[in-house]
Amino acid sequence: MRFVTVRKRAEALGASGGGTEHFWLMIVNSIALLVLVPLFVFTFGSLLGRPHEEVVATLGRPFPALVIGLTLLVGLYHFRQGAQVVIEDYVQGLARRLLIAAMVIATYGVLAVGLFAVARLAF
Image (tube, rainbow, N blue to C red; front, top):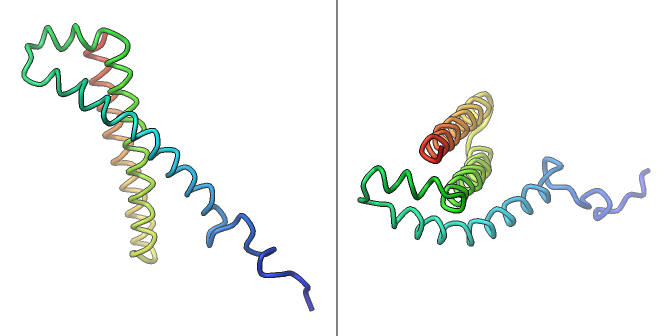
């Protein structure tokens, strides 16, 4: 007979063994997005409808390019984590693995295109 308490078995582990770490990453991402999204809205919003030369000149400065790049990076990473949780909760079997793989590939593809576009305009 084992004398292991329920708490000892569950301590620091979720159902998959990484629930606590995933939860904290989502919280940290959310806090980062609380700061980044308003900065992004004001930075990107001021560029809407401007001539191409003015947009390139603005993104040539480090702060606006960094705000847009970080917002893309943190926002899409947060999206990937959240979408993965939804897929894990509602899809079973091989379809789960395929959907997660497709979602991860699509998310990193969008991130790569977005960061490339910002870098191309900034340099």
